[in-house]
Image (cartoon, rainbow, N blue to C red; front, side, top):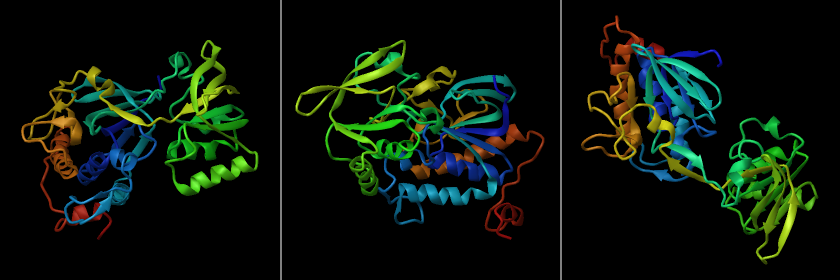
Length: 342
């Protein structure tokens, strides 16, 4: 087990509610680490609708999902939070009063006085391709995310998909891989046009391969791939040599391991009180779309409000001896100093 990373508050989820919670906690002198299963910040806003306009953020007539993420990142800069991306929380164990030990699937261990679940509808899980026996290769030859590019050096890579993730990793990995083949079910891509153009240039110059069709079977043994069978749109089958496959078939929302954390659930949501949005476990809070209470509205602005009240209660756990004096950022010189504006 790796050495524990100690922090005041651990936030699970780096979407808008998790990011704004950093601001509210930071004003009250609490240090924060955030863990997110995605490889980018912004949660659903950045992953599902980065360019989609949002019209109901107070004071901002229109902002995109990515624009809101960027603005929140700018707002929390003074508090220097630490992010751990591409990681999923596996276990939460109570080891003190209050103190929790939290582990991730990447081997990180945290010790935190407060845990805040800001996981949206749950964790984003990659969609598994409908290929018989693919489970036997997962984690050895089949990967749904790229954590370390170096892992794919000198590999014969088959990348499957037609969206931004498939194209981005095709372009990023082809310089270090032995050979890259991109496979998509049609010769039409949902990715950024400049990425598609770059890929086509590499194909035209013979530096990578593009195949149209779908994987129907895998070849290999003991989790080690030697190749794959492909069925083209003309129903013709062919074989391709590969030792690693990266399928990018999109993401699906799942409650994930939250169900195993000892927290009360109600229809895959986390019931909380409306005083501080605390769960049935003292010291563990839930804000944003993952929580439920009478009158709950699944709006980003509701999550911001929940984060503000959560921070007030979290302060009691982190600084039990310190009296909390409520202050306004407009008039408090000490808060303005923390924000670097005076």
